[in-house]
Length: 231
Image 1 (cartoon, rainbow, N blue to C red):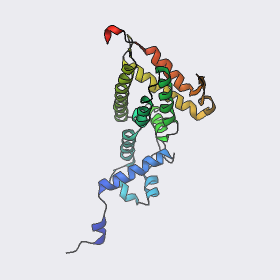
Image 2: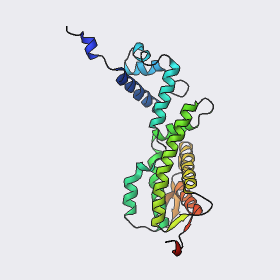
Image 3: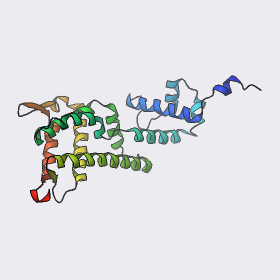
Image 4: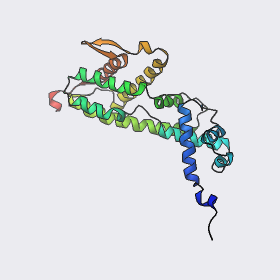
């Protein structure tokens, strides 16, 4: 017996769920959805779906909101260095002096994030207070830890290339945490005073971001030269 056309073309729930969450993520970026007002009906309307398509997956609005927030957290951009990996590799091949290399790398890093709405979505989630559930907070912490592990691994190799190491009593994770915090604050200031955070500091005849000069200062404060006996 031939199945009815509607049954043969019905989308699996998993596929519908993925489509709805992906659309909701885009709507978050576009500020069509905001924290505390993640209305499933608005997403369904945007997709042209019936109300039933959503409530077959989530029993209520609260369940959808929690699932959406977890989906967003899992896709947030936590200032990962991966976004500039190729540019950093090209920079490394130029064999620049330590200060010049650090400033140039920091310029690449900050420029990559100032124009990324996904990164600002990260900051919106980080700014949540008590209304952010433990499940969401734990997911953010795990993502943060992964990002800082990646940064720690890369920075460790770059410092060694320049004959430097982390000075006592600091650890490399202290430096990566400070750098990430610096980027987050700088990115927020960029939204209200873009003229103050542009490439407006001259170092050796080259214009750099305020962030990059502060980045260099952090690296210098946390590191020291490796003495010959340690090589």
